[in-house]
Length: 87
Image 1: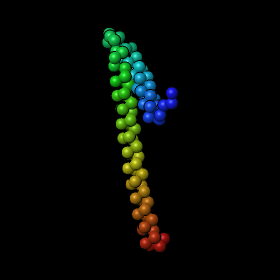
Image 2 (image 1 turned 120 degrees about the vertical axis):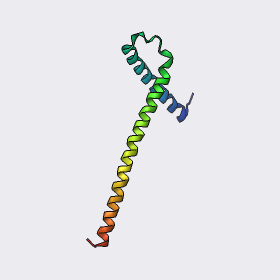
Image 3 (image 1 turned 120 degrees about the horizontal axis):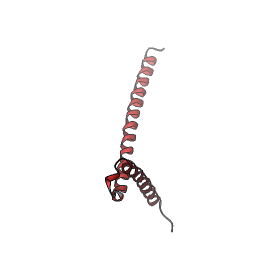
Image 4 (image 1 turned 90 degrees about the horizontal axis):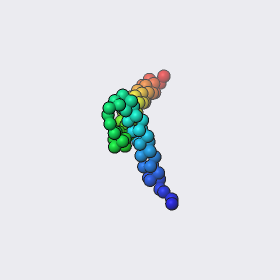
């Protein structure tokens, strides 16, 4: 059976979220052994972990983009001044 790109992407995201959830739940079980059965929260915890990583990465990328824009405008203004004064 041939699967399309979206199905493969969703399968990849689900696998990543599931394994991240297993890791986080494993850490919680080591810290709180009395926590009981946490198997039902593995996938939600994993998806929240992936969303958290995505939000952090987009925040970092946004800051880098702002720095690049400011630097670009500053360099353009310097170029205009150099052209205006024929330096």
